[in-house]
Length: 395
Image 1: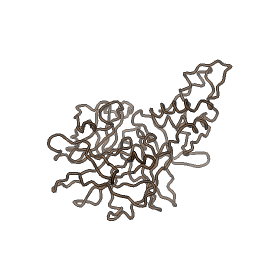
Image 2: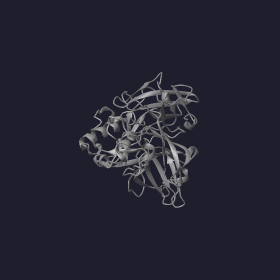
Image 3: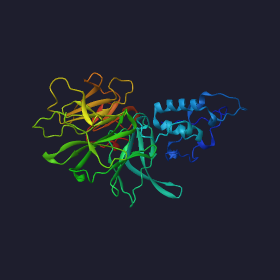
Image 4: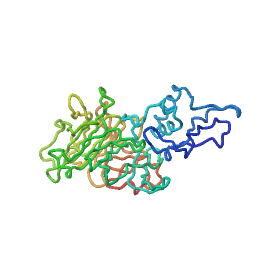
């Protein structure tokens, strides 16, 4: 959400530091392009001083700087980045958002596939539009350049709380990429040697980050893949940490599977604040636990008969910080155009069917938009889209 400038209409306010002026070339310690994120903050509006008095906001006490930064981080990580871009003392007083910590994840931001070429000085650069699904705000971000030396490709984007996984074909490594800070806080192994699974047989369904309370500075990246084809398809959850030389697997032996099932027992997942949740085809929810070894644990089960007639179940962000859905919804797909949406209550291990999904528009498999923030959604709120390209609806 871009902040508005008030300096021209409020001459009694202290001047914004020169390094914070638009077009000033401010770059964070993570290398983020502030030409698109930067805007002066309205925080200064509440201060009334005389025309003769000028205050050096760069010398604001560190405790006060951190308090304001924490408030803005609670709004959105983009606001936090803008605040830190104002001057070097404010950056020194606050934590670097390039760190691999859930509080700095761009969880409400969606990077669109469409690229535009723009001139940056004397060179042309490619930028992607990035939209906030909660507020409708839009910025432009630069993804790592694809060159002959390192060919990067996005291998999985759904449900990773705004983070992207990028695969370098030359070195066969995977990098976790934050599009707002342009930081790559984790380098992971590739898939070429992932025996007994061949890389070309992997279909990436979802990804996320799991934070271990005993080692919070070295979280685990998990990827849900469907391997193989036809009747030989099987679901696998891979996991690795920064610096690992190979991917491990999450033990999914607890998942109940019927012999006659033709579909994998799970085909996706959702990352929420340092936890990763997996929906089963039967309509249950499990979470990834890392100790003693990575494994799945049931956290919510469907009451009554299992969804034997459903062919897919997905977990979606609920977008409501104050609801009791623990940040997620479940969508059960029964047939073309037939969907049931449930609130997920992890503390009680149960679901509540929703007759109205409110001011939301859902795009399966893992995207929720705040409907009133996107006027191009002409059908209005309450719709569930299956196999539709969201970029055809966001303008």
